[in-house]
Length: 128
Figure 1 (cartoon, rainbow, N blue to C red):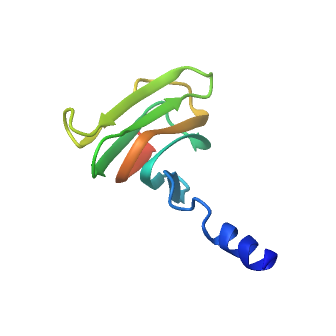
Figure 2 (cartoon, rainbow, N blue to C red):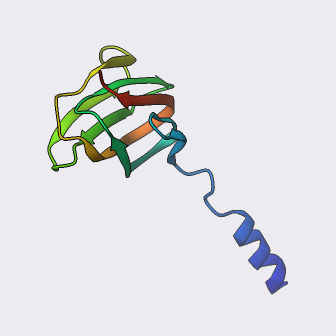
């Protein structure tokens, strides 16, 4: 009987709670990925080598309800050169452009999802 109760408790764990995740699809010259969530939040940072002083970026969301997707980039000297946020129901569902000028080398790409429910994607490539 104890074993049956233990198994029932384990199988009823909260696997359906809010979650958010980033799936990196390419990390070479370009840096691409997808974001998904069911109401969860996260803040992940990734190193990326940018041989130039700017980046071209694209980001989009198809959020079911609520939440935000933020893309932050910091250059090799630690200076923030890009900080863009998409919020479901406020403004556009996509954004693209060029970062501010920074120092080439190892940059940090930071992805922040807050109460994110849906999916999205991003792509970053060295600027011209």
